[in-house]
Length: 168
Image (tube, rainbow, N blue to C red; front, side, top):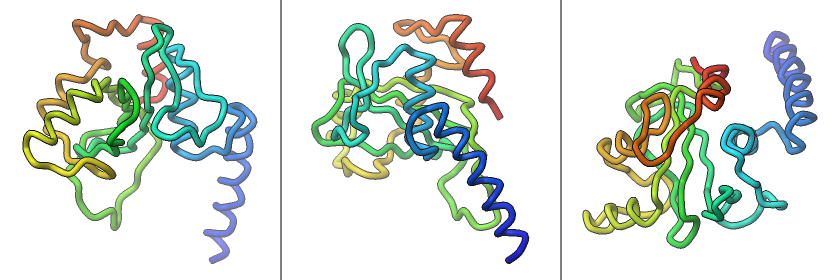
């Protein structure tokens, strides 16, 4: 208990420093949104409670940002929400028990999903739309904009360098 209490105190100090940098509590969701805003120039919503939309790209398209510490093929979706889902992911992993594992905060890949396309695919296969929707691997691969190059969404060398700072 003493060791865990000491580690929690250390974590609280780090979380306080992160919160001072991003202006919100140092939770995974807030950190992911802040990272996405810094890297991709997303203008975040003023209130973190905006339903389904975290911000807008410069071209006006709305975006919901997710940061999953492992890429397990699951995506939290809204029935009605953003134009796009920008998903930062850690290493690829099978959805399994978390016992005995860790989830380090890392960005190994970035995916940009067209919301309508993902919802249409799920509905056409009779799949659930909502929390932990199972998105086919082919859609994850097609949506990857980093580290792979994407034909319709260019990630600049500067953006790549920023994302590389967060890799595993």
